[in-house]
Length: 393
Ligand SMILES: [Zn+2]
Image (cartoon, rainbow, N blue to C red; front, side, top):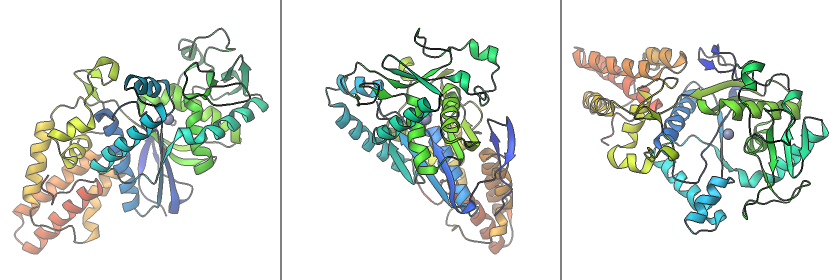
């Protein structure tokens, strides 16, 4: 199966045709949340986009296996648990349940499999051992580091030169051979998250946690790796280095797809800046359809300030009024304009404009039958984006 879909690929630095290895089973992995607290609308933007992408791939006839990890093994989780006076494992489990509820409320129902990384510690240890055996990693005290000087393609995804990389040292430590080396294993002093390993008690580094989840489940190579743009360096760069050195196969991932930042008041939304709007809070003022509509009205690759939400909400209400009583049936070819927009690097704002135009044209159309079919196409298109024009919330 061949589709006309093109996606912007961070590695290539341009839009390229979407060519999965097995169209019947497109494999997609997206970096999931760290469950130290509830997910916020910055996370929601990323997950709504990938959910809509998965829905569209299914609409095009692809089968989709969508895997998401959950970071439940992290100092942030441990310290949030101790602040809450809870056992860290119980805390993480509770927060995973909260996260899944939020996903349900946002109609994020395309994830086929969630994998908490705490279930993959054994795998991370085995991968770390192989990387040491093959000479790509080294032990230093209770630490194990990946030796970035052994991986020629380091910096390729983030398009950084050796010199630029030298200005961005990772995890400063005298134990390291190179400034960009990153930890595969860390001897933690935290009471929780301590696992037995050949290098003593500790826990896997953040980057190897993803490779430990993806390589056994999706294989040495898969189709789409997604996440927020800020994860490109060093997180995704490190995943490529680990996976390609482990399996000897490349490319590790065919399409690297990244969503841009959501900003609040001109700043990145982050817990440390105290400008976080959680999904739960947002859902008190917006319905899931409205939130999805707000985010998908903006291109996934542009920065977004979460402004103009009132006008987006009014627009959705207007489109709903025009689609009132129209079902989502009618002839398939009527979706051409909608697909053309999404085929161009998932240009959802243009796809929404198309649906809006169809509804306006339907309102002007003399023939009742024609009008119904046009409005029906708009309803169907928006449904692919997970926005129900026949709904009332
Ligand atoms: Zn990740």
